[in-house]
Image 1: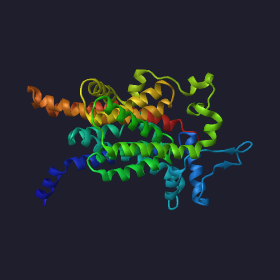
Image 2: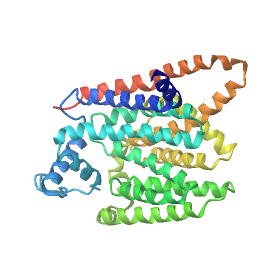
Image 3: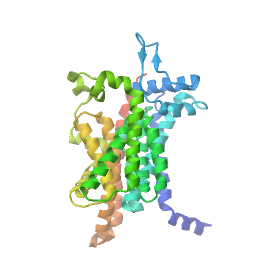
Image 4: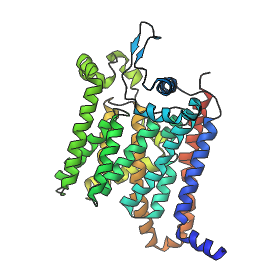
Length: 383
């Protein structure tokens, strides 16, 4: 029995480690989430009210008579419907504490699968899974909050994974369109996804890399679908406010307050030193020196989000969540190349030492900042 167990562990050690990362990440998240019975931001209480309204009436609360003079809310309600389904057999506050954290931890599995697709190396994928579990800005913003982005970010990563797999098997196009459709009814940031796919096709054209017919069809269909959904949901606002809706119709004098700038050090601290530095290095290397089809896909996302952050097209903390996810997965390429280079040198016998050093670096630059920022978020939760 022991021999069989050791043999199974030898063949499936990566699955055991991945499961361990998931359990540890979820345990730390839930520990902080249940440190207080309250949530850390007002958007959580808006979501909680919508969840309770859907559970009791079956429809969201779009018209709020309790607000001064009445108020009409405009939002995509699918996320609230999903949580409301869980609230049918669990208390709504427990749903708000538990389910978003489970959604957020799913990014670990998706990042692992994505890293395998682009690096073809399980060890690189495990390192990426460990980092993705503790992206400081994403971790701290979703632990004690009913945040849409606890589901949006994993669905973005899943869309990229299905898009890559579709290149090998056209049947992955159907679930891809399904995920993009769900994203469109969860949050308007689904538009970022189809824009990034469009930039990817442009980069392929510029580099004389042949795009597949399936890629063009799915991108065009998804783009029209997302635009159609957003026009239906936000038609009146777009007609009244025009392009200023991108900046939430905030007066120009107040824009610096809402879209505050961030320093390079602040961005590094929010994403983590390892994925930020080596993700940028990978983008530079593959954008100007090498040609790899699916690396351009992640570069497209990084370029789009970076431009939106610079031109105040997206809130800083939200942009850094997306950027952290993209740069973390890109790091798998750098890690694989570094490990291959090391194995060809006389330092190859020190691979265990370097791996131990990397784990310590991940703990210092990813886990500890995540815990610190989360502690501050929980401590500041209003009663």
